[in-house]
Image (cartoon, rainbow, N blue to C red; front, top):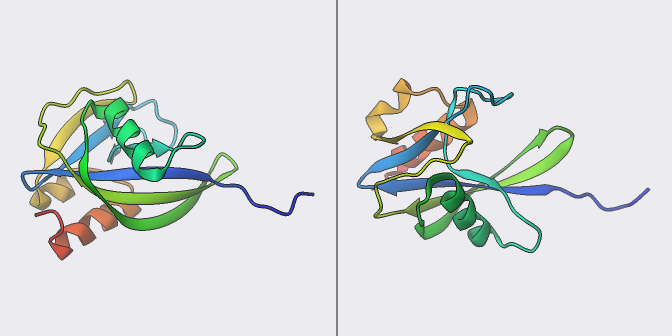
Length: 138
């Protein structure tokens, strides 16, 4: 048996524009979170650093280019038998027009006071609320 543990690395972007957060609605066919709202992100490719992977995932899922990328939180979970370490980042964009990938069915620029109008995974809703409480969305 090998002594080392391997994990996948995932990245997520809280992208803010003019005080509003970009959120994406997962396709209903998504087995775990179908119909939930989420933020852009995904797993890193081999050899990719976190900021490169984040920018790639944001471009793939939204067509946007994030700027002012700053680390925010670290979290972990298990998906399909794979242990995953996740990194959340704050980011900005000046772009408004989003080009969705096939992973998502809709997008919105959510104002902080609208958070309860959307269905998020509990841990993501908590993280978004924390960002708003700290005033980091401004």
